[in-house]
Image 1 (cartoon, rainbow, N blue to C red):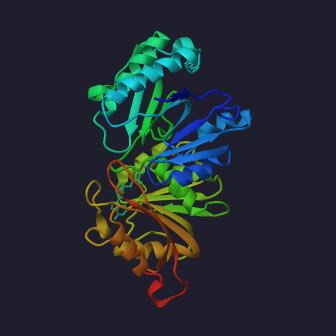
Image 2 (image 1 turned 30 degrees about the vertical axis):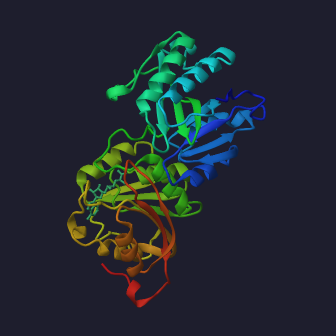
Image 3 (image 1 turned 90 degrees about the vertical axis):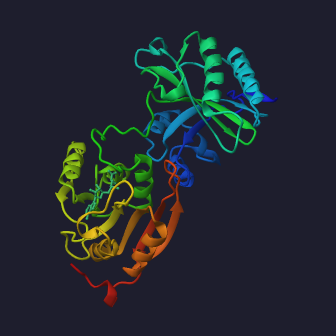
Length: 376
Ligand SMILES: C[S@@+](CC[C@H](N)C(=O)[O-])C[C@H]1O[C@@H](n2cnc3c(N)ncnc32)[C@H](O)[C@@H]1O
């Protein structure tokens, strides 16, 4: 087995960082990362990068599209499918810890506050071991080297706060070992004090907001706003637009309003997306994650027929506007959008907790066609 710790010399004199994303938005995460650093590699759910300007390293923790960001500690080759690969991996970690001991992250009062280590692992392809087998093999070595407790995640156990969180990913025959930069995952947003059923994963909402292109626009509407995730990510992407959030469920609107503490230039209302209470051609951007039948039933005017939603979206959108929608039934959603007068500019399939919805980026097909006349 070849293994090597990533040393400063290996990585152009700076640490290599590894951003984890959901499947499908790696290029969008790379584009966001490219504004503060240099992207070195894009893999399945990963973007590897460096930040040449040390003054910009803190900005890594403000990235919106990655689920989380880690500092790469080591890469191990020759990690195959059989269980014996885990012995090789453990040996590699042991050697790394001896030759290049990984530092525990500073948390507030310093390294002394770190109470132990935990490990999250994932792999691509079939293996004769589980993620928990990888985690326990690596975790035991890290804990021994650092003389701290290892907290296994096996059987759904949740590690206590204050542990150093390590990440192992295995793709092909290569395993990477990396240490989380922040003391909690980046995808956990401070604004999400309360939530609703079917609420969107914030990094996906951030990717959708970026696809809409928000610079210089007056307003952004989410007519099925739920907890407000899409609009809060829009605010993080651009301070300018006024946020307009509506939902048929008064409880959802209350949640969004509560989460909005501190988000200025925002308006929230209870309304049916089948009758959006806004004038024709008054909205510059739409971000929407419509109800889908399995987890979040469509109600009100959308019950049984979502075509009215698409006609309403086209009605309120300006002729040079853009709508970005998450489609859980992409073929139906795209057909309804096209029938309502949208041109499908781009589609991106993503993987989200076992489902494969599609992000649709839609523009008005043509201004002023008969079929696109405002309807109420
Ligand atoms: C998938 S959830 C949206 C989640 C939201 N993006 C978030 O991040 O929290 C769909 C939302 O559509 C709402 N909804 C269902 N039927 C509606 C209708 N006719 N008009 C407006 N909203 C509706 C539900 O109340 C629910 O909040």
